[in-house]
Image (cartoon, rainbow, N blue to C red):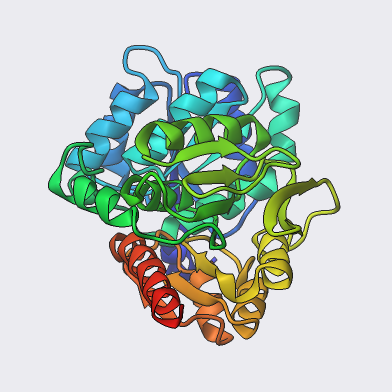
Length: 368
C-alpha cells in the first residue's frame, strides 16, 4: 500500500471495557482496507490519552464502562474536542435511553449489540458498523454549544406559537417527516417548537424496534404535541404526532373524511423497514395537496422518490439544508431529482410549517 493511500485511511479508536468486544470490533473494522484501527481503550481515561496520541478520525464508544460511563465521556469530549462518535449500545430499555441521550449530546450514530452471544452477533453487524464508521468520518459534528434548546413552556416564543396556533384550521392537514442519520435530533428540534394543536404528524425515522418506543416517549416529553409510537388503526388528529415502530412500515390511509395510520411488515424498501418512501407514497396517494412533506438529515436516498410524488400531487415539500444536516444524503438526493420546494436550516422548518398552515387558513377564510 502506498504512503498516499495509507494517509487516506480512516483512523478508528475503539473504546470498550470488554476485551472480547475490542478484539471483535478490531477484526471487523480491519477487514475494510479503507479503515485503520489505530488503537483500543478499556475505559475513558485510557481513551483520553490515546486520542491525544493517535488523533483518530472516528471513535466507537461503549455505553457502559467502569470509572467513567460513556455518556459522561461523550459530554466531556463534545465540550473539549468534538469529533465523530459511533455508540455501541445494548438492545435494552436502558441501552435505548442512554443511546438516545448520546445522540442528543452529539454522537453521530449507534450500533445496537445484544446482551448474549455478543461475539457471534457482532459479526452480523459488520456491514452496518463499517458503513456507519464511514458515514461518521464525513459527518458534521455539532458541539454542545451549537445545539438548539427548546423554548421554555412559558417563554414568549412558546406562548406566541400556542396562542396563534388556535386560529389554524388543521383538521385536514398532515405533516409527514422522514429522517435517518442525525434525524433524532432534527425531529426533536421540530417537535419542540410545535404548538399543542399543530397539524397531525406522521414520522418515519430509521431506528431499531427496541429504540423506537423510547424515542417516541422522549419526544413526547419535550413537545407540546402528544407524541406516541404509531399503532395500527390510530386516527390521525391535530396536536398528535405518530412515530413508525422500528420494524414496521407506517402508511396513511383515508377513512371517510379522516386519516388513519396503518402498519405493514412487508419487505424492506431501500433496505429499510420502516421506509420513508413507503410512508411518502401513501401520503401522495391519500392526502395529496393537504400534506406537507419534510425530508431531514440521513444517509442514502430513502424518501426522495416518495417526496417527489407528493410534490407532483400538490403537496408542499421541504428539505433540511446541507449546513444543518449531519449527513446530507436523503435531503441532497431529494433536491437532485426536483422533489423539493424549499431548502431550509433545521431551525427554520417549524416556523415555515406553522406559517404555511396559517396562510392556508387565511385562504380558506377568504374563499368562504
